[in-house]
Image (cartoon, rainbow, N blue to C red):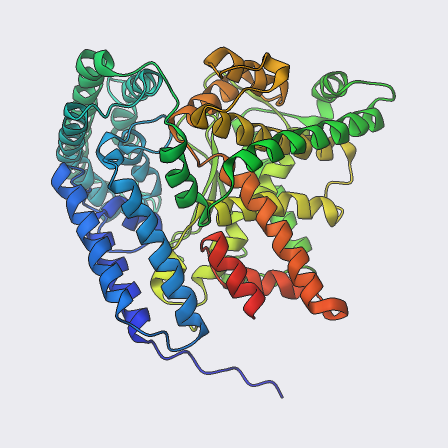
Length: 563
């Protein structure tokens, strides 16, 4: 008879990590909502220079306390290493002053203040009351952000002009009669079928007006003041880039070697895509095979309702097929909700369940304006990336490990190289397991992989100012070369690729973490296979590796091989 081990007794390191989580959630209610930590739904972070100093002080105090504690067991050793590494990496970025200047097209307060409303509950009148209160907090958060931008600008720290323009455009989608906040208030309706009192509707309208006015004020500052100060150059230089790369990976990489590896990986993928194209249409090139697939009505969906239904069906099928065969998927997380996002950026993303699982894990598709037709052969791999065995399995199962992992490990520990690397590994794994045997679906996966490899080259090359590949003429990178390189290695829609290029130029180090992370996951699997010899079991490897939670790649390797 197998006995279930007793729950782990919390240690001083567990208590420190959980104390940090609670204090960080209080300082940053947007992060708290993302983590699913309750009690902060009506507030927003200050985002002022003083607020950034408070966040830094909390990190430094926690690091100092951590240095005085001795790990009690292997779980403690992983927690201490992961917490220390992530806080230290954040402090290295803060020391440069980049926190106050943060402005880009995907991960800055311009998006975060607005996007947090997508995660809020809308089931009851009380839920909408919380939304109204948080709407009323938007002006103060925007004013704090403006103060940080102004302080950074006074030091000469200003985001590139391209990112300022993106911020202006995104702000514009949030004010006016058809803006996000006006629509949020106008469409308010409790999902439980109840009625909103007239006073609650008035609060929502008032909060929406003040939030929209704040975004208009932010837009005017960006256009009238910051744009004139913004540099035209996108590159941040190799020293600053190395700090961002470390933060997103949880390890330090040889950037020159990785730049060359990215080019080699692109060549490998191009050869595999060419061979796959010939399986679809004998003698065809990759563009010809893709055109044939796009013209096939059986591989297209019309409208976002059909897209959402297809997403949900394929996600459910993956859960049913993988559970018990290649993974153990606990019943509480078998449900993954697929949604069409209210934004139009073209991004597809996953949001985690809340701590109590009352908010389920969700896959969101932000459909660009005017896009009404979708090619399933391109997108099946995305279902596996965002859902199961990708982010949903990875993140939601970690949240269930209450007996062994503290709340910080379960809810807030996240390193992009680990998380996004796993999701790319999950795509490739599904091909290995036979779920992409249709060459059309395989070509979609390979095209997605090609994009991820291209951005390793582009992101590192531009920001570290390496010589551009010969295919775009060599010499220094510029925007034209970056665009020609990106479009040569991805067949995705122009609007999506325009957004992606701006993302790489304004959010350095993050986009390469997907492919670099996958490289580390594959290497770790082979190292574990060699160590185990004939006893190696893939399902057991996945169980052990995912059981660590999201940590830096160095910490992951040490934890998995030590076990």
